[in-house]
Image (cartoon, rainbow, N blue to C red; front, top):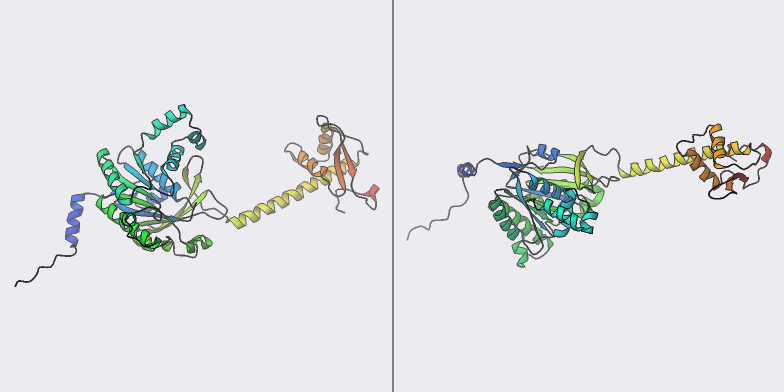
Length: 391
């Protein structure tokens, strides 16, 4: 009886190079985010697997849809983009695309017939297809691959998010819990990226450890929620966070980037236009910014109190006579108080509430006020008291 021939396992490097020869040059798609494209040697490769990891509201979907819009609008060498969205449904995603096209959220919600006609004409040009929760990663990827082939463009699948979508295994009930579901979904991303030669960009929630200190004490590669399959499945992994005190800035750390560069950069986001622009690292964290703001308010209030004291001192010398608004301003100006920048109005308002035992009262009408300075406290030597000096 002859020996049973065992099936051959594995491939040789020569066979892999032969496959490269038939596939041709590796294509890269520019995202339109300059520091990211530079780190990726011109753009994201195809096929490739990218994960955007971050806490809720860190800007994951914001960044993903901005990149999707740039891909879909490229005239030559562009992509046909599919968005499998569960965290946001197709209507919500379309509002984002409307903003990127120059329309406002209000216009998208008011739905005026003329606006809708213009918006439909604009968005109909986009090479984008939206998939809802009824689709799995595999079914959406297969449909997208066919649409991209018919359009002669490169398929790019956006998944939002890896924790909330389903793969065929999850849909068939073959996963036991959240961790198993995420691992099945990451496995499905690997398969569809290779099978259809597509770029897949998936958002991922961050784990609880990343929330503490905004992920500063944790290895960013381990930030994905539920399973470490995310960091192992990613070929490029971006970890997004919001610097304290800067809600409209995204800090992007390139935690993993095979055959390219890692690093970090910051993006300023405009929520009205849904735009992203590279910016410098914010100078202060939120605690410092809040403390600085409080110090500024305290200093300005103290300065205003000094002006109010100065105004009261000038009015005392008027022997208690009433002043109309013009005379009041003239008196303030003569006392060296700047009247052009609203300081006199602010000082008058403060003095009307009482400062250092004096109060400015109006005995006229709203249209024609007559201002009088009155005492609200008894001073030991009232005749000699200078209201500009503290009690």
